[in-house]
Image 1 (cartoon, each protein chain N blue to C red):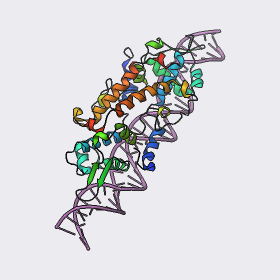
Image 2 (image 1 turned 180 degrees about the vertical axis):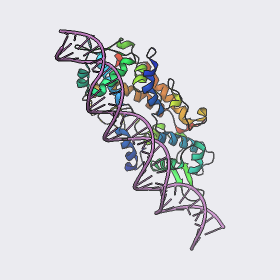
Image 3 (image 1 turned 45 degrees about the vertical axis):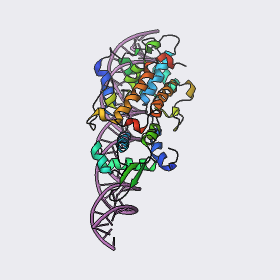
Image 4 (image 1 turned 135 degrees about the vertical axis):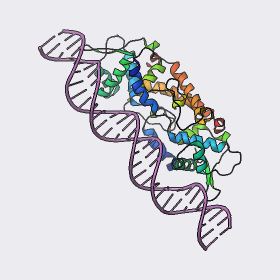
Length: 156
Length: 156
DNA sequence: GATTACCCTATCTTTTTAATAGGATAAACA
DNA sequence: TGTTTATCCTATTAAAAAGATAGGGTAATC
């Protein structure tokens, strides 16, 4: 809005933009995956190396990589010379799958989620809900992006 | 991911999908705006009526409508027969503007926000950031939806 | 068998959202 | 003019979640 008094718009807005809609977990996870995808040799990379290179708290990254291993994206090797490595070819890793594991649902409201559907408690009829109607479109537009991009597309 | 063990995927995911990415403020705000836009007569509607009809806590709605008034979307009238009313024609109310006031930035990360840009503290070079690259696309896709829809499109 | 590096659980701090409370102000109407 | 109606405004609180940290367990390599 153009004409609105500045202080009133920005107060709420300021609070919001300090935090990101994307969780750090997802952010760090994506960075780590990209880092691994960009490796020339396919030998394990240590957590500490990724953490340093991407400015991530090592302990936090540890838990993220762990969950990426459990969900079938990464393999790991213990002991000296150990670390994490990509299991699949980056071109075969769809970002829809990555996002759903790291961030959860792609939809902004549970009632339009494909994989995590849940009825809204306050809304008696979804078909009569304006928010539902709008968020369906937003979900589809986001899905299109994630579906048409793989991990390989993130490498710069 | 298909093959991943169920309990491991769903634990994190469960937590995430209990909460919506869309704040209740935005949800309620959109519902209220749509309700007002759907009015046949253009006389003020009381908060209590909207709150009842849309299943919203009246006090919470009060603050939301207040902020919508301060940002130029709604007008209000005090006293008997008072209430809130839309200032513009629903066809002229772009959802980009509504979303920015209610929800804040449309981008999922500040570093790709058009109206609320801010550098990420952990990222030395945006052009070399895979997350930045991806989130630019997501932002654009969301923007397209919001730009091509007005309040009138939300009425069912 | 010592070192390396992943594995796992538990806890804590901070931030944010959502909601509530209580009263001030202004308009309408008798 | 005074009573009712309904918006206006500030402050507080409760609950949830994210992010980060701590500390030790386990397995593989040399």
